[in-house]
Length: 131
Image (cartoon, rainbow, N blue to C red; front, side):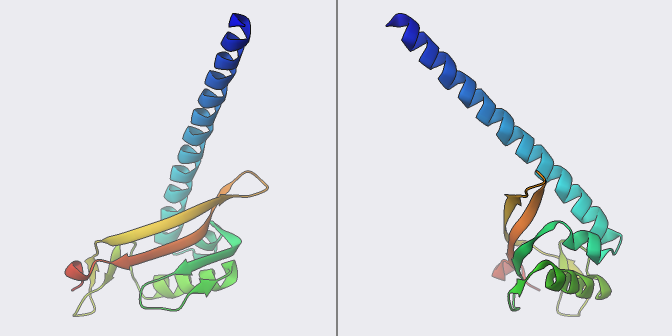
């Protein structure tokens, strides 16, 4: 009985460590994707930005309609780029970009190729910080 208990405990520890390694790998992969997303945006490359999204992704920008699908998401980000809005900035009262504080939720989905991509992207500004 002791041997079985030890084997089960060893298996549980192995599974727990594997889960931890997988979670750390996913976190690293997603953090790297965020870096390339930001670089693509700052390079004004809406196609590269959109490539970070799944084909069936949706974004829910503040004060706008939901945007579904990678092609429409690319158009959305192209509009943001053409409007001159850097990431984490939004137009203030005088239409100049200002820093924004707010809430942000993303859901990442692992594709069949093993790459993590954005599946849902939702953000809005805190009312107290809107200018």
